[in-house]
Length: 130
Image (cartoon, rainbow, N blue to C red; front, side, top):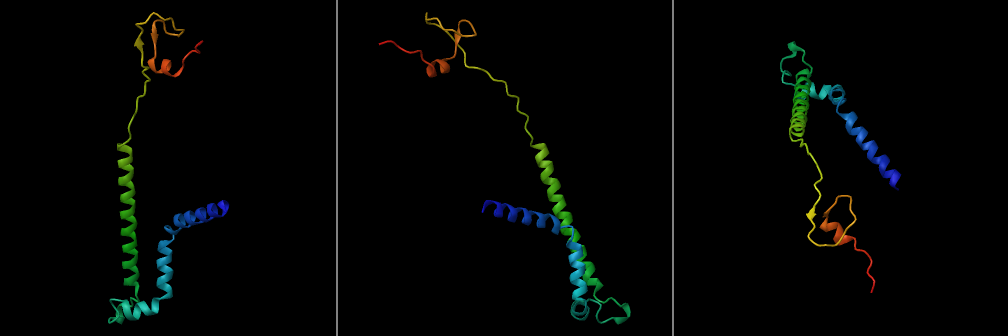
């Protein structure tokens, strides 16, 4: 079941990636299929047969609209990348242990003489004899 979902997601992602480059071709194919209808009904120059437009004005408008849409998407992606680059935070992490000066007379075995960590001592207690 999980492999099936993974394949489905990968196919959907592949289609999404491949659809954008072929969008102009899809517009052109759609135009060629519907060219008779476009030239008779939608063409701006249908009343001027001497121009022999045959609906190409509609095709040019659709291609221009598609280019503007792609340009706007590209600009949004560039803007997001710029925001991503400029919001990068450098984090200088240097560990600072909690060290407290010892005031009691007990002896602790540590690698730092005369200092101990209160947190470590609260966690690790030696066994008691009762």
